[in-house]
Image 1 (cartoon, helix red, strand yellow):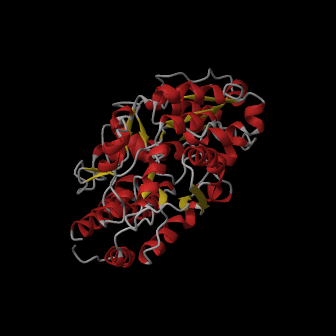
Image 2 (cartoon, rainbow, N blue to C red):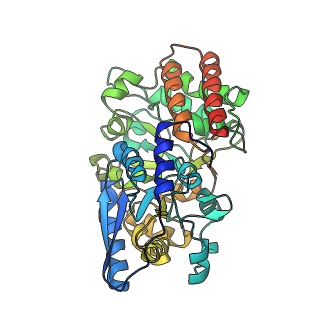
Length: 421
């Protein structure tokens, strides 16, 4: 293995060197540590874990929750101490790094031995958690960004509600018409969440921020400029709160309080949005994303359940991961409204869950038109550079062209550093 150049990579490398062969499963009861980052999903995963325990006598699941803001730091520390949880959540941005460092256990052999039908899981979902030709997870969900809107504000503004097939121009026009400065209402909110903003619009303009081989930044393209300028134009029109205002009150809160009329955010917001007074009053609706010059696609992702390469109970850990990726777990998962599962056949559960709050069928239509989020070996480094650049651009301290020129250089430097690992 090549020497690592970043401190926490050294920690992971040290953990890898310290790994020993996992101890064989014993006949005694075992408890698997299962690490997740979302408190709101704990009840759902507790139901799934309970169902697993009923089918696997002698195996207990200890769900351990760490907030996302601290999750990765804790995981890095555990990796350095050869103390990773038996099974833990992973996202696409961090997966390649952990897989490349040998911290995760591939599951191809176990899947084959168990006769698990991986072909039932959409290939795009499996690809997210494959590295160097090996499969590491059985993804249990599908997501996408959609446009959420306030029906009452559309009615008060005398505007027809948006429909599938609407365009960038339609969104910008509606955002301006819905903005009422005297009432403190904005048409939309342009946040620093690059997935909810520029990532999607750059793709809709026909571009990408990263080359297919993951080695070249592509912020210096016309498509990147067009996709970023789209959001700056909305800010220039006064149709969005400033970044300072959003730092004080986040976009989701402003939407639920009736201060933002339209919001492009994830399908995963369904449960929290459904619990709001806005939904109880029947004023939340969903539509697919507006179409750009080339398409109306949304980025998609999936949650990965990983087995530590040093898991103390590798056989039991695999059995749990297989159950998490099973149709039985998908049935429980979708009935909770957390997200669509990896199996489209359970979409109806998800739709029915929200039937009294709002119609989520546009989410299922949007997921049919998605693209995988671009990732590289160590995506977190250039993601930080992206956020820094977006602060300057969306605050209008620099032009889109100049801001993206700086970002192009920063991201390429990070990618070049990856290549030297």
